[in-house]
Amino acid sequence: MANLIVNILYVILAIVIVVFLDFKYFRYEFWKRLIVNILIVLVFAVFYYLFLVNL
Image (spheres, rainbow, N blue to C red):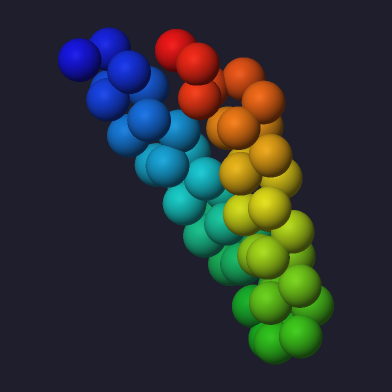
């Protein structure tokens, strides 16, 4: 049960960061926004598989 809660909070954190950066810095720049969003998701995926997969 704790693993499910950690996973849900991790996904919510990733979504909040992506949305915040989109609206704060990259509102009218499509390609920069797309690249930054992809990089953020990749970083979150790497950290997930390095640290949270074994919880």
